[in-house]
Image (tube, one colour):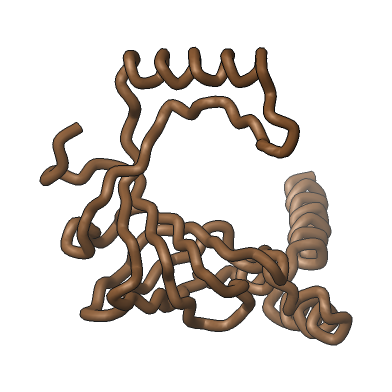
Length: 180
């Protein structure tokens, strides 16, 4: 009787083990999937549309004239391959650096009142936008630190390349040298 129970347990274990191995993807299956997606052209499409001029991520390293950022979200290709997408952000003398900070309640109330007035008397060719709770405050390149979350704005469309020339970098989070 003991041998029979042992034999049944082993058979069930083998069936479960082979089933798990069959259904879990291995490297060969992943390579096949990636290969098929590459052939179809789907894998090489970026998350960004061809006319996108911004991308966001966290700063990984800082050089004299460039930043390396880990893009969030990464392209479909890198999601499937499980790789981080690092982009080189070129900085020049024209690049503007700003930080988003919260507006005071008085500032927001004043803008909200102006918004309500503009709704009452709209101009025919002028778009009306509601006020936001944040404002941009100028900062310097030295205020940027590794790990900061940023949005990079470019004058040109950002495509699947590795480097991007930045016209503006928006920092989210604390900068100790700035008054709030």
